[in-house]
Amino acid sequence: MAVLDLDRVNVNGSATTRDEAIREAGAALVAAGAVDAAYVDAMFDRENTVSTYMGNFLAIPHGTNDAKDAIHASALSFTRYDQPIDWDGNEVRFVVGIAGLNNEHLDILSKIAIVFSDDDEVAKLLAASTAQEVYDLLGDVNAE
Image (cartoon, rainbow, N blue to C red; front, side, top):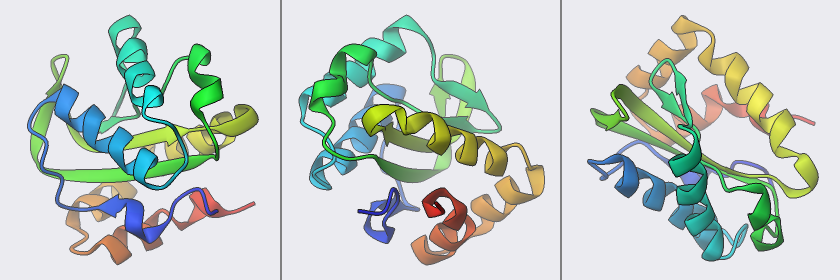
């Protein structure tokens, strides 16, 4: 399984709150078979401990270490929102749900961070009109 498949890229997220966005990200990971539903609860546990807001309109909700048994495969979900979501006082337009098997999430996180550290890339992600365009812009997250 690729870390990010086109069917887990959503350019029209429907959530309007942080918690709805976490549920949306987690549901995509569950639907992909990457995690059990219990992992979504662990995403809320993590968020209640430390914010997963990363800057540049990005939040990366993920489960706690206690949820490792709920992960079946490393995977990402990517959702973009037309209207900013209030994420503990920060504006979020992108929510990347992540699950990493055997600590693979650290490498995946670094690839996401590289994309979002470039303001031009963030602008391209905001301007993209289709899931395919977003997927192509994020292509390096699947690179070995």
